[in-house]
Length: 427
Ligand SMILES: *Cc1c(COP(=O)(O)O)cnc(C)c1O
Image 1 (spheres, rainbow, N blue to C red):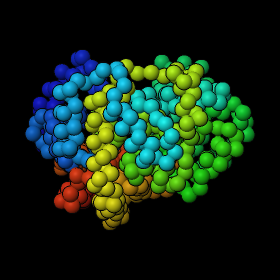
Image 2: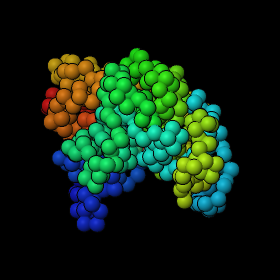
Image 3: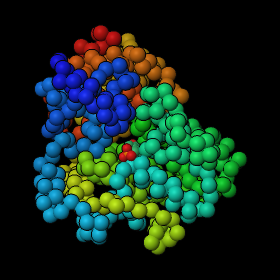
Image 4: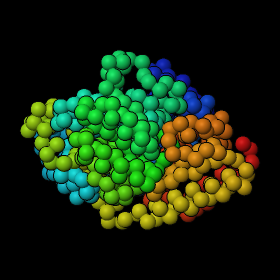
């Protein structure tokens, strides 16, 4: 596979963009390669500037659940942009989006649109603090909630991969109210609640952890968080930026039947355009400006283009209900890889929830960040390079989820397993 043009572009990019990329994981540093530059995508495939074709399991890190350039989404955006991209004034599309989100997610009475997942979690935390008049928050090691100062503590994938669990430029004062607990471990939460109960505004959690690979919540974990929050007057925030409309149309909260107080959304609800949202109980949401004292705003929030792409994606998902097929495809792929690894006697632990999946190169059972970190990253790097060479585009890190889309065909899945088989004899 030739990457000459990508290499040239990467050199050019690095002169004017730090690291050559607009988000660090794209630089392929953790896998010691240069990234291919992508020129177009269609369905399950993406194509780079050197003419290489890949079966894509990154899907823009989650949003592209319908595959690339889905005709209905393309049409909706084209239609919309011709009538003006943004007005900074109310539009009907925003109501339609809010109604769709509130209908889909059991816990949402009201919702506000923002422009990224980061903005959603940042705003949800501010709202929880304003509503409770408390300062501290609990997050879980290995969960990523965007690059919000207060949430860059043991923040999973990008940070883990780069070996910087915390970021320079975040004063310790900014994270001094952030408490870190262990995923799937309620006793670690109890310890914090016992010490700081009356000071804790919120617990924020990925209901399926997708930024340290893919770690399902163990039975009782989310229920336990719900009970503890209700009892201690703590706002329970589900960060469903990745899981919303991914693990089920109604998100992980529908799948596991737990109602958080606030929910953060992003990725799929923008259909590939930059979108985020946060919503929840009316009583809490009414603390937001202009009704309440918690300030939050956005020049491009709810802009018509993003709403058009997102709404069309959601409507297509609702109409076509690809979830049973997604489940089947991802199970086929995950089981196939699991079997191959067993045959090759390579230590591994495979996880999956719906169309999110991960293969950890470790003998440990992975239920939390500590266990995820026992993975053999050198082996992952070899696996990644072998797959890329064979036209399989995975996320360039052991600590990322893989995503199957509705556009992946049986052929795609079989080609992927064939590639994996060839690759495993080399690693
Ligand atoms: C991707 C992600 C975010 C951050 O969203 P951005 O749009 O990248 O700011 C936050 N939380 C979770 C769970 C995510 O997967």
